[in-house]
Image 1 (spheres, rainbow, N blue to C red):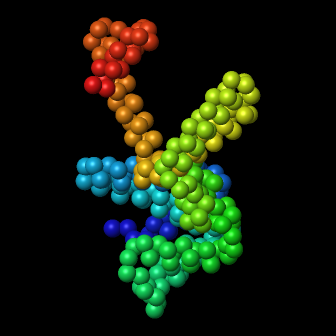
Image 2: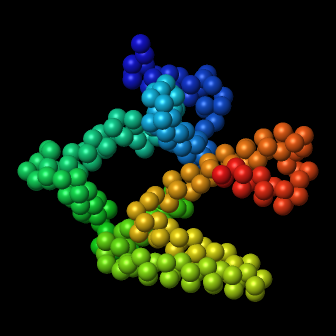
Image 3: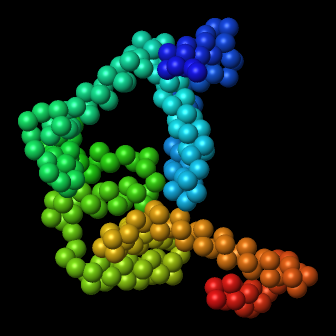
Length: 259
């Protein structure tokens, strides 16, 4: 069985002057999208495992993420800026530092206390002296729903939040109205801005409902695909394709699919 050291050597060999032309061409920047894709494929592997208990796909996708980590580390070593050992050392230090209730004298009897301590230590590490700095630190590359929810949660912890569901719903209604007004004006820039505000308020609603905005939208998309598949199957039984049917016929099949 290959070891971690074996794997490190394989990547170094691929990046060697007489190695693989494609691997040698890669940079931190060129691998950016690969890391995003592989991370999402791990998430898909987790979902499959939760549903079916099959772990093979999850194991494979975790390997692909490890490949990305090793590639970046190998490039870093070639550039003389960091090595995989530096990466491992730094994350190990962070885990020890952020778990003083395990590796130190602090106490944390509940998960909520652990998370509170984690946030405080994180602020100290990053030198965040204001709530604004904390909001700015939320990675901009995150999916928009997730980023919005994290920013709202941080602002809420600082006391800047709606007081009840009624206020949240009122804001959603207000932003929807402003979006429609922008649409009527025909100003593309204003439409995009107001629509963004509407989506941001809708994410806030998800927080008050206690649901994950990203997961909810993913599930809604899956549901749409499933129903559309039923509509297409029903149309096929009639000897027709969906593109040949008018909207009234499609709506009737859609309602049947919902039932």
